[in-house]
Image 1 (cartoon, protein in one colour):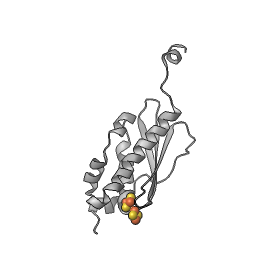
Image 2: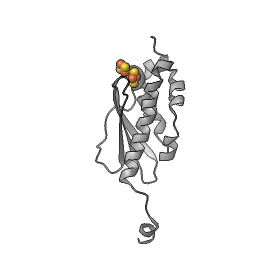
Image 3: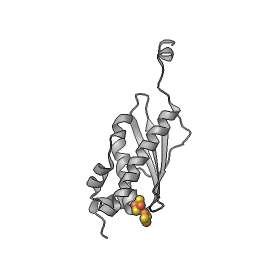
Image 4: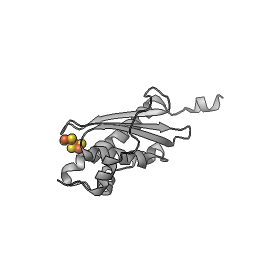
Length: 136
Ligand code: FES
Ligand code: FES
């Protein structure tokens, strides 16, 4: 099966491969796996004090479409708020990369990775309560 040009581009020149320190307070880490094929994707976001994602990293052990999907979303989440990042849909990823139906689950992995990274960040940063806001 031929990969689309967009997949080959991200596969050959992956954006933002690597890792942040998962214990860093400004970092959220999402690790997800695809039961169908055993591929694993780790996505990390770095969030600033305004709640905007400043940077992202990924490591993916998987097929070209999974690598391209994760590379693409590291670019897409940058400059977004957490809620805006959660709005990224796998269908947008699949469309951008021209993924064939059999590779749709690779883009679902990337959407799930965003959700997992945001959930991890939020779990470690409970929203401030009114009491803490007014007690400065
Ligand atoms: Fe082979 Fe995903 S099924 S890498
Ligand atoms: Fe399973 Fe791509 S993530 S084939």
